Length: 470
Image 1 (cartoon, rainbow, N blue to C red):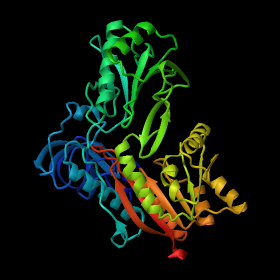
Image 2 (image 1 turned 45 degrees about the horizontal axis):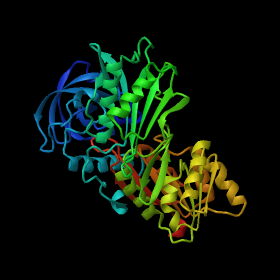
Image 3 (image 1 turned 90 degrees about the vertical axis):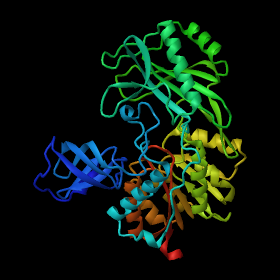
Image 4 (image 1 turned 45 degrees about the vertical axis):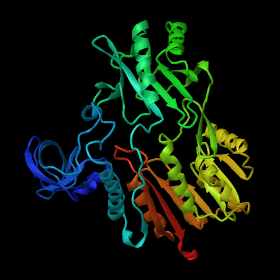
């Protein structure tokens, strides 16, 4: 990762050799959840180690900038360390932090945000409103969607995730961060496929039928959808499969087949067919109802999503007089959440289907002061300004790569009074805030939100205010 390459500074003589064993005291948590320490002034990343621990480790990868090592022995164990409750935690790699208490996870996620700002900016975080991470009351069984790859092991159908940095498929009969219904559906589908001898996909040979079992559940509605990603359109014993599925899981809302014939790591292909029930399932966030197709993006943790959007609304500080822009709007979820406090809402996204859904969602909820357009914010903001419409507040929720340089330039030219930045990557957030600060904005607050407990990911809501308006 780019952050790591900078960690060790300029090129120096290699002091650590691959296979070498040495002691390390862990100083902090890294951006991927690993422990970070130093040996002979060289940065060492140790997955599974925790701040405050002393470990003996073995170097598995060495560069001029840093070394990555595995734990051989924990000499001094943190009081925050615990036994991971997941049976396949050390093999799966889907979670990185089950081995420590939840309160410790929340503290270190805030520190990861702090580290990013200290590395990339000169902002004194002690002088802004930098709050503790908002966590979950129950940080388990929170994901509303699972995607389990299928395979065969000793003649038995398995479904799960690939082990970290490998193509070994780990069977996961019970994922404890997934909603229980998604686990139940996956187990049942595996058994039906086994009983009916439906061929499963072999990644190496690029042969077989069933590739991925995708299940999505509506937390508030109880509706659930099964999507079967297959290599071919022709579904062997399809009627028998559907009959068995409805018999064993009679509350099924929707069954979808998606065809992906390519040799690729992408889950979905281009063709989708409804095999049974509705095309879309229904889910609610707060007072809003959304209709979700199998491929539609929707936040994976609906409980924390409501908390996240509430923080966005606080940071926007709307009084009913502001023109609000929801950039990267998707199906319009964030904009709709704040619409009741906005004078006018406008959103944009580069995906036409998302804009169509955003317009429908606004209409369905009686929000008639919202406008959605296909395209980029850097195109629409200047166009609207020329037409006499200026944004007072801009909400951005970009991908992990952060804001495009062209959008930053556009924001600095159009100068909205406030920018609310929803980030899933502290490093790109800090870099973007640095650029916006140079252009006349001041960082006022940071609010980390834990959207994915037991993993290293942390979301953050940042509020930036135009200095001339203070």
